[in-house]
Image (cartoon, rainbow, N blue to C red; front, side, top):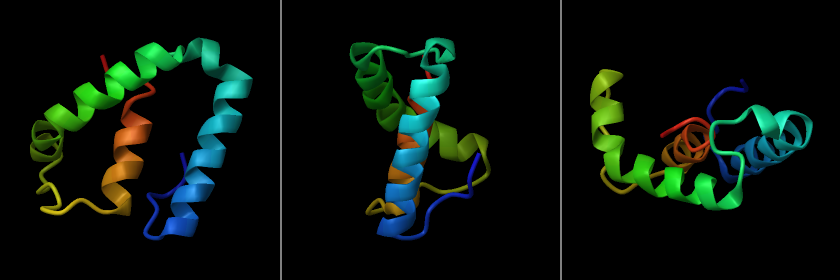
Length: 79
């Protein structure tokens, strides 16, 4: 997995990597349909304070590029 993005350009690169990963191995993702992916994304964003707490971090108060990247990455496996 690539490092977490710290800029818009790095977020774009992550999104492109996710797209390529989906094209190559999307059938292996827990949430391999758009419907499941978006449902998982919403669930992860909702539960993200707990995810951050479990990682020993505080959720960014106003969100940031890293937060969105984590949300998108988490949606590939979040139930």
